[in-house]
Image (cartoon, rainbow, N blue to C red; front, side, top):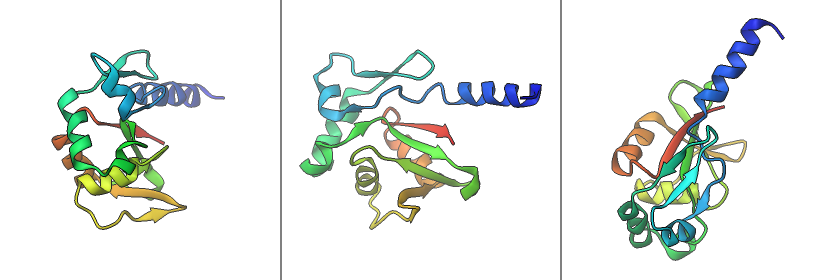
Length: 135
């Protein structure tokens, strides 16, 4: 590898430092005194308990029971500057769709995606429930 390739690889690792090392189920987070997940960079991503509790009110039980947080919006430059994949291990895409009042989410290669203005609005409404990463 060249110096530039090494530098770019190292830079991309740090860009994604805020991503969760492992997302946690909503129910697990609600059992914690100070809900958090560890990040790839070795830090902690803390959740606002009131935001977590709001999910129990706004989401159907089948969605909240299979919801892993934080929701990860992954920027994929191949899809365009304003497009983000909604990474889903459980019901994250469905939770996002419901919370944003959308009828459906578009998909490419069976992956749900959304657009920058919706991601920005979601983070404005629920600042601790999501993170942004880069693919």
